[in-house]
Image 1 (spheres, one colour):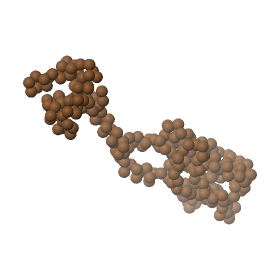
Image 2 (tube, rainbow, N blue to C red):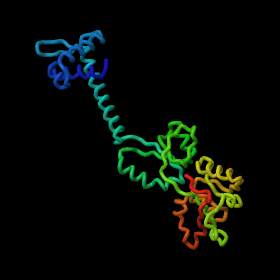
Image 3 (cartoon, rainbow, N blue to C red):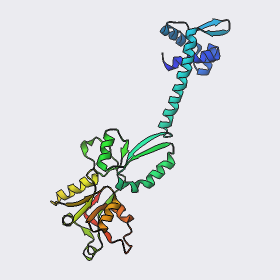
Length: 268
């Protein structure tokens, strides 16, 4: 038994006529007669009995008719829900965003919500490496991370934006003379950087290895405002994406810090 045969049978009962059912379903009357005969053969029972101009349901036919209407209603609901999903009218999108990147995605997320108001957006805030693994394990649908992604990860990537990494340093005469900072200079100071599950943390370690620098890591955190506060408190210097540094009001007399570009160029 398939859904089309069930639909033919229900429509014949509703219309009390093979001819009218055929017209409603845009098929020929012999097609419907053959399909219902096959259904009766498959079920090994009689479903309809002719009584003059009327079509009467047998006890078995009544059960098939009532169950058939319920099945067709469920199938129609299924088609509607699938249509909503395919047309992005309804659904769930599981998105991984590292805390450092969240501020850069606010405008994009707002635009997405305006365009697809029926899509529920569930955001997981973890480091880039963690959200990459979550996508690989089908725990998330997509995620934001720092490129490049390892070739053997099995993930497809698309670049969204690129920006330089900067060093947030105390406002002092020594640092005021610097326009850029080399990896070798970074190795001479206590560093405030991301947790190990951040893709940018791995890239920074690769940068230090390329320059033969053994960094002195003082504090790790996933919160950029905390790292900035640690710089202001004199704990060390922080390595942050330029957009985050631009959010800091370094012109306030009490700010106590400024930022300088890393000589190695862009990351992310």
